[in-house]
Amino acid sequence: MPVTLHHVDRARWEADAQTRLDLVRIYHDAPDDRMPPHTVEPFIERHLNAQHSFACGLFNARLLGAVALKEADDGAWWLSDLCVRKTTRRRGVGSRLMALLVEQAYTQNRVLRIETASLPLADRVLLSKLGYRPVAAPAVEPGNPPTSDFVELDPQGWHAP
Image (cartoon, rainbow, N blue to C red; front, side, top):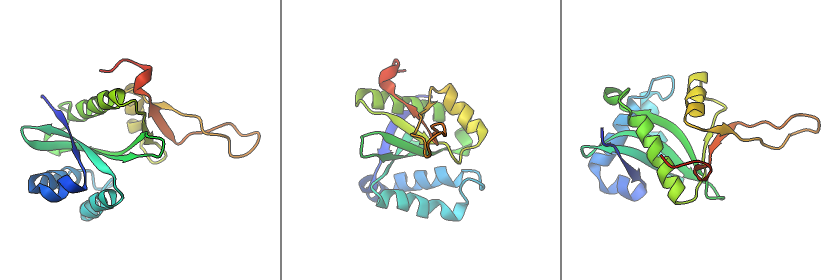
């Protein structure tokens, strides 16, 4: 499935009715325990109002998957809320979307980060398989080991897919 990368920011959201429809459909397909249907549009609006964007997988002029993307002060991209349309799951859309983001991060010398504190174990295992590694944060108290509530992928440290 030839999925390509498509970014949705506030301008694209407002200008393109099909983009709005597709992005809402993607997150409506999320499991209810992750995103109840009534929270989808406020979730998208919160991200766009905060100047975040969505990196999306595009196939046949339709968005099939999305991940929220927030640029940090240090230029790293924080990713959250990856979701793929139910009808296209298990076809590599999510993996391809993540690989395309890695390629783009590689060309732009960016680091990708994902918070893990609230992720289920299965999601953490998937991130590990994709090459994301915990990053040690400074110890909060003397004598306690450093901990991390996020994983990081530095595309500069390995070959682009």
